[in-house]
Image 1 (cartoon, one colour):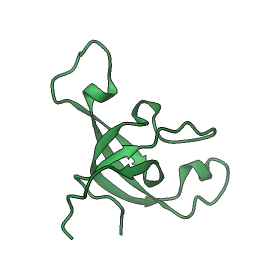
Image 2: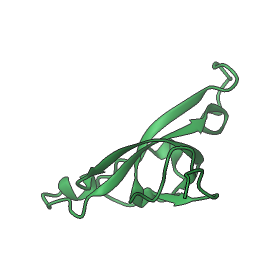
Image 3: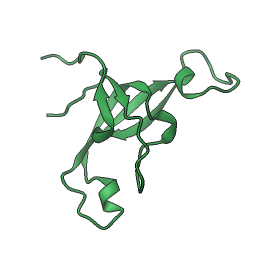
Image 4: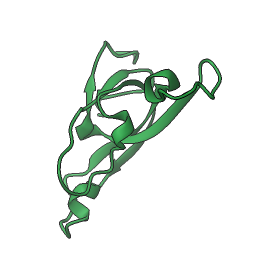
Length: 101
């Protein structure tokens, strides 16, 4: 069973560990909404160093409000979002799940 389902609100860890990480810096510390669960995959941070990558980690597509991501001149439409693929170990829940129990 996965920790998150589409519609769940999650926060990306505000961390800057050394080494090979697959979490974009521009979404660290931000809150978004899970769009999709892709499945479980070997941990790319471990694979980068020749390790097995196991146990596998769940990978999610998370949408973020563009206003939270971009602090530029507003060259986007109201309601625009940006998505990023984020591994489970970077995510924490921020509200109750929308999934049926």
